[in-house]
Image (cartoon, rainbow, N blue to C red; front, side, top):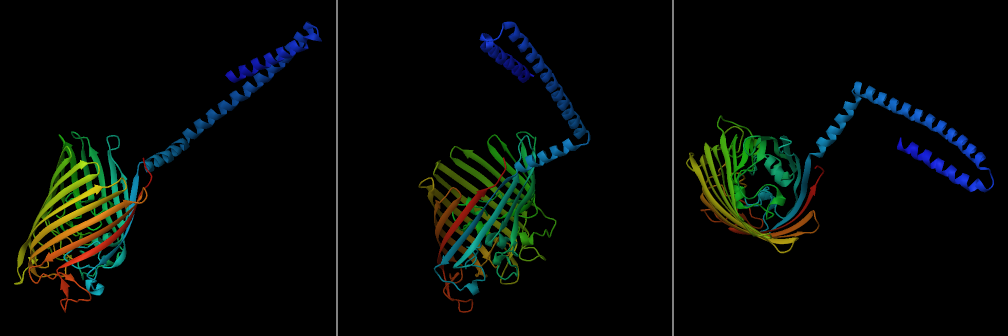
Length: 471
């Protein structure tokens, strides 16, 4: 309405100026009469325009009421709601590719994807080879006090995930995980934030373990290769229910799962037993402490028709220290005992006992470059082809005691904001209690026993990490 009055006022002022200008040639009464006639004409036009606008507004209101009564307005609302829901999904992931070179020049046909040694390189199984290590997609609908329900899914592909999809990851099991052409559903769970105390987060489904300092996801580790302690002692995933909360600065996680450890290809619950899973963490300034573990029914083992053992206990301690923004370090100590998991030379069974310690640190030289070191030692008793170990890949199948020492040095450089390049030199030494010849050399075979007690391996890796859409 204000625009209409403005037009009328502007027109009147214009006529007034015109009349004033013409005053020198026309009598004042004639000018005023002419102005009055023109104002009346403009008023008639304004009234007609106003009537048209009012009619249009009434028509729009009637159409809106018809849309609402027909449910079409709600349909458009559903579309907007779906868009909002999709925008709440967080998507990310990475692609990791590598090359490794074994200075022992092992015979690849003999290795059969083991890269020699007792589970030392399970995620880089082919010696002197290029590999697609991981194509990984993370999909999550996060939870908070306003949106208490959600989910998370991790889907992966490549040499590492393919190994998990293989039948236990051991040599000669007949699976195709070593070929690297398998997808692996690493995680898939429903999550809910319960309004209990400070809030309790529940996960129900399949989720990554809460045990250990290293993880399956390549970008989240200091080094390219996983350590011996991770490969031989620690679980990868669990299926069950997990509850987490924080009380007085202490993080508490407790869950019930099918087994202490499981392989995706053999995730068959063969007994009525279950396992307890936990993690307790506390931070004091720059120091972090955690105690985690699993106790209960052991993994189904190397076949789907029998158990690897009875009960198993895994105890895991981590001390981390970040004295500076560019320096991080941790010590990870593990103890494992599995009842009746090993076949001895007399046809009976023995318990498998193991102890391992891993110390690792990373120093950031600049914002884009850094170096990392890892030192490890572990000992494993009654290593009689123990089927319950996470990934054996071992050419040593009969020994009462296995000792492994490892040193790994890694340099990383962030070439762009999303692309990281890493190079690594790793040395492993093993004593198997028999002849201390654990690693294949040159064209050696199992028959001629051409082995070494140590090996050097060089690895390079490129990781492109991306973030998708989502709020």
